[in-house]
Image 1 (cartoon, rainbow, N blue to C red):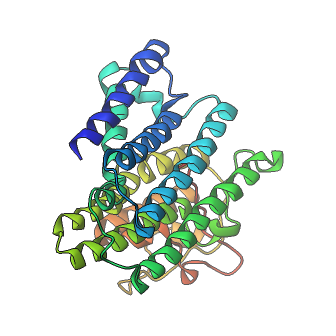
Image 2 (image 1 turned 135 degrees about the horizontal axis):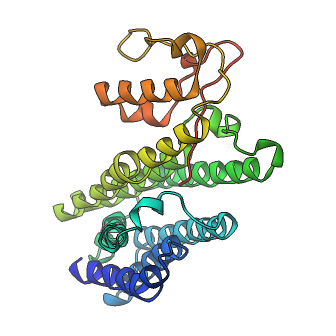
Length: 306
């Protein structure tokens, strides 16, 4: 794993040194991340010369398909938008900007742990099981959720009538961050398949594959995903006209307090929703607007840029 971590860090620092820092640009940030994912997967496949099992190949191919789709999508987006607002403050100082590229290297290494760990062992003695099939189905469903959410968001933003508006249609009517939900679920499914094989092999180091979905959730929900996106959402839509009836009952059974519950101001509702999440620790609620959260004739807005 250390060799693959060094490879990821080397690629990220190289792109930062050649383009990121000299031009104070994040243009190739996401694209370089996808390239790093690809190089790590390829490196683990060529590192150990063996006949790969269906489980090993599916994990590797799934990772390549995911990173290719996401990388091209994010690169096309930044070419269209010209910049990523999340970097406006970060890139003002080189050390914080370098930190972003370093975190991405760590993320690549940790998120690819299921692929790395399963391909460093010989699991041919463990036949493909019902767990593997179930995990594959969940992975495909999660991949489609992320891809469809990104497609819906892009189509929404490309419509001039939706300029400076937040999306509440399609998957975004059900989740504040359906793309994040899909991504976390993908790696959870893959980690479960790999861990199950590891338990049967008696190789419990493969259980570390669960660091992939855990770190992905941490990064998206605590560090660079939800916090930055919702901060930008408050800035963009804090004065947005009210959305009717945001009153709800939370999971603990208590009503949502405050004027936002009645008047539906985006900024107040989002602040209160985030505060409620922090009190309860409910990660699921940061990804999903449940149907009983919605008032008659209105819906809770959601926004994501990941």
